Length: 276
Image (cartoon, rainbow, N blue to C red; front, side):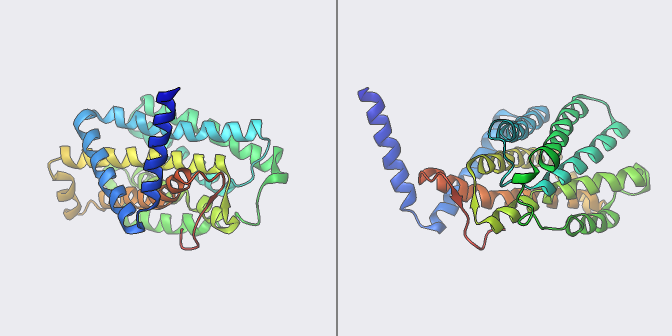
């Protein structure tokens, strides 16, 4: 009992110390922690498959949180239907691209994720539509899909890889990069974030961190050849890297306020007006 009390006091002291730091100090600590974690991942997880699996596990955890929320609490309040629809779109396109190049465990995992996402869409649209915050989930899908299509036309790999498959490849990675925007837009409109919704978005942020780490590994292992290919006209590589950066930083902002609210012991997370 004494050890538990001492450990509890230590956690409280650390929590008070973190809360007393300025925003600049917290951001600096977050960046240093992120770089350190990337270094550890590079040191111990050199195999690309491990990072892919970590990304899928984090994404699956997010989906399990959604399934729990929809089946146990019987409400979809705070969840964006449009983010789920964008997720289903980019996973479906990614599966088509994967079937065009290879058949492996990636396709199986994507199939399971797609099935779960379609179930979530069904629950929000039909079973729990009375709790759906439609008035707050008002970011038009074409605001996302049209710019992504334009980027894909400009940056597709070209005829060597098959123009249709090349377009689809760039299209899905750009949609994936911004698919969480409707969810964050809904949160911003609602002003507060329910616990399960916050956990869900945070899990997506963890998934994106592992995915970003995977791309950093690819860049290092290529010895700079990937960057050289960009200069030779392979713009899709630049689009893929930019997409990873965009989605990582979009979710990093949310994760910062999520961790801050957890440390402060807040049940309901609130975002400042400048987020998203």
